[in-house]
Image (cartoon, rainbow, N blue to C red; front, side, top):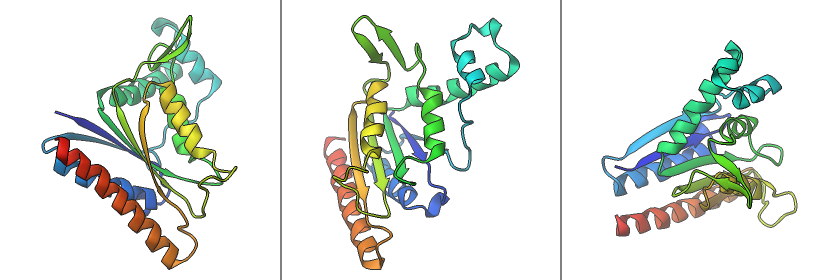
Length: 206
């Protein structure tokens, strides 16, 4: 049985553009994988604490050496990593806020990027430990940023996930959402077609 982890990070909740796209994809994905399990985490409504020096020290300390606060931070991190380890597919809603990822998503990344847990250092460099996973990223933007120097979001998310070993990544974009109703409709129609193509391909191999 396959397991999908759905991560939403929109401050607008279910009404957020990225949340709408992840919902559309997961609905069609489930049709191709009846009986599959879906783990849902909303990083906006259930935020991960921002990383502190004390929490970071706790990640690297032995269990008996951690303070109660450090142990609590480790337990949060362990739970998030456990979800990722169990998932075969990761679906991420990725809105752009002020040219970057939501702060709630950055906090989540800080809690799952742990040496010895999701990556390790070797003589030839770091090695990701979360392999054999497929990631689908639904990136939504108010303006048009494809190919622009200010579009650093895609490369950052790709680099971070690849660092953890998740290299099979598919991006789906909906841009120009703040440029009027017509542009918004076109963006959603384009993303919907891409979702149909991706899930139809899954149906053929299921």
